Length: 131
Image (cartoon, rainbow, N blue to C red; front, side, top):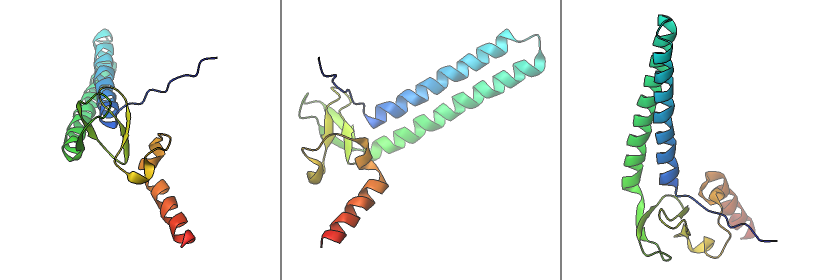
């Protein structure tokens, strides 16, 4: 039986995809408003909800743009293209190669939990208990 290859995604790309989905959801609500133009209050409700989705997606795009300026730019060792890395572990934006800059995590299985505060607290606690 063939083992399935996991494909990872860059955090920046995940957030951008989420914002793009919000735009399309907003357009769908607005389209629903156009289809229900015979009922003014329903049309207005759909239009307002759609507008809120589009505004929310703009906020998310702005936020990820600001976050992207703080990301660490690196060259992917696999595809040799420039990419940006958020957190302790991330994936290449181009080839989906798991990446880390943390020497303690090199050689370990890729897991997004390494970016959480809870995991870092556990590691500190274990190191403290071992001393």
